[in-house]
Image (cartoon, rainbow over all chains, first blue to last red; front, top):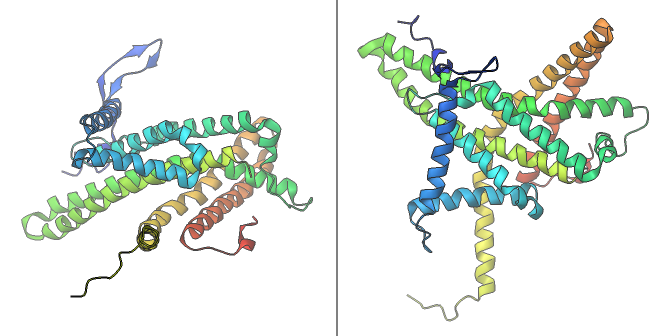
Length: 245
Length: 106
């Protein structure tokens, strides 16, 4: 049984519609499918939730309004009032990551965010955007100068500069690895524990099954939390780009 | 039961709501943030070292100074990772309780 159902089989990318353009493999895979599903779900969630536009919101509408309020507060707290112009970006990012994470919790589905290339693409996009923003806003000289903390003694300056630079360059890596590693570790753990249920059968399988239920709840918590952390850090980076220290 | 002789003014009501809200957010923060922090900090260190090592190897190949820049960048990257870690924890501390200003200099 174990050979056919590896706990890592769930992360396999399968080609659904093979497609080759100019030597590049741009097949429509299950990853593409679930990314599209996430976008469709977010769009449906927002559109259906705001369809009635009731003054006193119902359950569905309040969920939509709560998610809006949540991100608006997050931006207000982390960037300040002028950050509200980046609301569309932050909100789309949060909803996309959240729905990718949550769709992955449905049995037999595929977790897009467990693949580091997906999260790294998102993180690199944020990193490049934020860097360009701060260069455009403050000029290249001020941007490069911001790596030197104020009040550094001159003999420490070269070292501090490069340490700051490395800490800056590590951002997209830590941002993407955190999300992907958390999702992958959680889903692998769920599959391993689920394997125990099958192996122990009717007699002993109940203990891992109970654990599985608890862990599934925890994984949903992690899915939401990681989407939140991803968004908060984006806000923090954006804030630093807008107000160079 | 005794009727209250005077209704609270809007100002008092506002004050009460603000106080209560402050209590709620103070109480609900640490649990969720503690778990978030635990999942967050480990990656910072590793990514700092990884980026430092990666850049070191690439620069060494490019400039032909084989082990020198790798060693240097490895330690710089590790220090960068620690710096990010320190900042992350400081930021969490800031939201939970005010820390003294002398800690914020770095």
